[in-house]
Image (cartoon, rainbow, N blue to C red; front, top):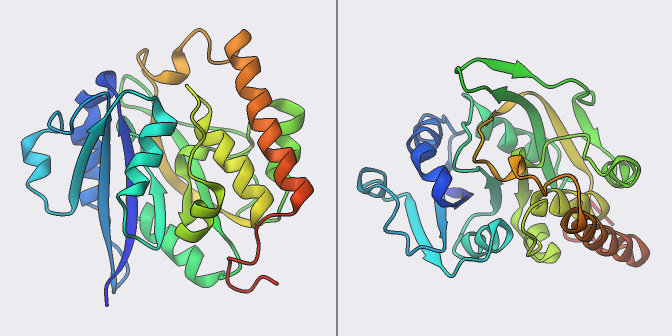
Length: 255
């Protein structure tokens, strides 16, 4: 029986031109024996027909659309159509380096007690060059609560949520992504960290494209009333999870 890792990708208008590169990087992934991927592409505010026909020829690609709701809604809707036991994020304008998905699977299989993985990121600059990001933790297990403690002090995660790979049952317990205009991936990372231990992969797991039209380049992303409301919403969810001690039991090897 083939085991599936579901790749979920939200798409907005500005990211559509990059979708070919994201698809090429996914198609080139070599997965361990017995594993396969499916790609759930969700066009935010579209009907799915915006995805190029040559991409849709691959029967592993499943495009959908719906009312415009922002990246959190698009991610959660894409996940709702998935069938895999693992769920991995891939933004439409980013690129997976060789071996990225296989390393996620290997970490999950080698460490049955972890619920999620993240990996090192290289920024993909407009001239095509790659730039490393300082401050990564040491490769290996990430104990519960460490990501949240760092975020609570800085309002920035110490690892990149755009590299997340999650056990599907844990994602279901988290409720998917928060319906925020941005930072929904950080919100999920913080929640997962309080629910189950994770694992940091030291090899690059993503080439993160830098361009003017990306959501994180918006003026409201790191300042102002919207930013404050987003941070408060993330904190409220995280604090409730910490108080209730939710998680753990859905992950193999946990009490």
